[in-house]
Image 1 (cartoon, rainbow, N blue to C red):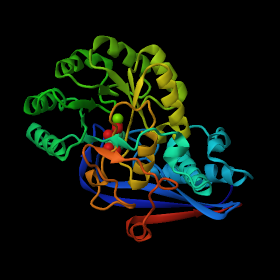
Image 2: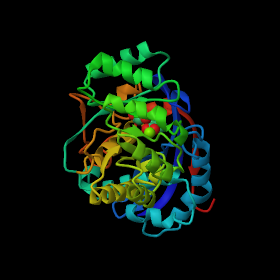
Image 3: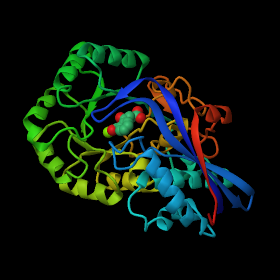
Length: 374
Ligand code: OSB
Ligand code: MG
């Protein structure tokens, strides 16, 4: 395949309710989609990708405007120069650009989708997925009060979600967790995510979470604190799970060997793409480490691709792959539907969903077209 043009569409999609983490409160999903056109033996084919970078650099160093800039100045030009571009070689062609895994992943997604269309293949079949549905967990934002937390989680349990993940931060941790266990008992999968809001000196405080039978605690400490997570893991009974710290397969190998993570949250965008993500899945499986699929409030496009990756056999815990209606009144693709605590793994060609042109028009705030030799 030969890359002919790349258009980046920035979109802003209203959220059904504000989503609050330890680092920010979002009311819209702001991201950009990649539309890449290729010349192929079957004629012109368009592939789509989605960047999981957020509007501000608070979850990672990446952010929407930086992703658009690095793609326009550096990443797309490198791919324009390749005569025979394949999904498997995108990472190699981009290897000299340091960092920007989310921008690289978005571009790689578009190449993957075009290649799948060229080969008439679903993403699940390409990856070697082994199940038709994946269990659907929900990520619950920090609420204004303990009562509100209990109510919101009760509603998601009534909807049938397979597991609950609650965002926590200092001052909004033990009390909401205790109240949720008191209200709904010990019989459902429950985990917490701190998004790096603590330091190792909080160890004694975090240990109080041990009495609530949580599946895991996700990323209590900073992105660079792999060794400190290993120290904290020794002090807590709750299984340690890294998210932000796992930026590559190498980082995953280090974290496993140091005992910093007994479960891994895999997010393709955070590690530079789906191909690197699959490597981490394979590496973790070889070490007997369970993985689950993280979420970044993706539109239906990213959500469909995530469900395909989560159909690999090492994904033994429910992921953050909720229905589209968890976040959006209206998705930009076909809705991803949660039923009986699971979502279908798409079986259509490519990612199995398509961007609705009318909705793209409505949600789009800006488009940047990138052509060879600009
Ligand atoms: O830490 O998992 C996280 C959303 C944005 C940034 C970071 C995270 C999250 C989520 C949302 O928890 C998960 C989802 O998409 O359902
Ligand atoms: Mg997380």
